[in-house]
Image (cartoon, rainbow, N blue to C red; front, top):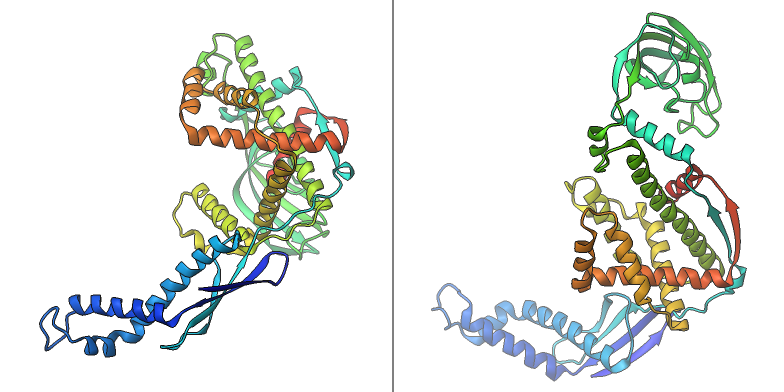
Length: 435
């Protein structure tokens, strides 16, 4: 077998492979003989079909099948001899396939890029610093109570946090516009569901009142025809309801999986959960800045094969989130292209930093991460034992810790600026990054 490799770009290789005709012909003959022993044809008893008849009938298809197998096997063997590591399966381009002639074909494939890391000291990271205050806890508990609230109709003027049932119709320059009309629409005042000024204009209205509210559509509104335009809404208030918040008792606490016998104990559990969420959000913000900095300072040629693999993972994740009722391949790959490319680039950069600096996941940090995860369960010790006795799941934790180690390594060399922030600020940034 003859092999030569041509470098056509930083990540593409063209491997030319030659296989002697004798090897192909021998494999084809063996396959045809096996076919003759099993094939059924009219006029012949099973296993008694002459070789020449079998060759005339099946020769071309068998040869094509054998050539495909030989190309795959030869390619794998050539990789072992050439010390080349492909990033994905190749594209085969046959050059000569005629019977009696040596087989020659080209395998076109991508390899992992050689990465030269940029200047890490040029990376700028904004580190948000925040803590959970009593005010934050009060707001969180109020939100939890409102999630469980029942509604009671009232005859007074409406105010923020009330839910109103309304009919409305919108006009621009005196003409009704498409999508600007609804009946029996339930709206929580102050929720920000509607365009600025709409909800505020309803505050103070009572059941049975007809009001007019003038607003201006935002410049970044999703409908091009409405962007920046002034509009008038005619609104009929049909019902005003206020939320009846549940009492802070053990029954309420248990709805959220918290075993507490007092409001003080409940607040403490809520605080722990918020602090854990805050820590994760601040870490995610820092990691995102580090990744942005790495991508800006280092050029990375990404094999499309790796991007395609990541797109398939993202497709599967999306389908699972929506109930798994469709074929993931039905989702257009373009939707995931940018996210997949960023993930692959990030993975390659992190791998290069690990390799170049001999970084490892510290055992103590792995144990700490496992205990942190376990603390969210009712039986934390059982969870710790489970991770330590399950090599695959523990390896996932080690991978997370190794990523954290890379982030810390970059932070030691980057320009880090701390910024004081509130709990809400940090959580909002984290949500925007996830979105």
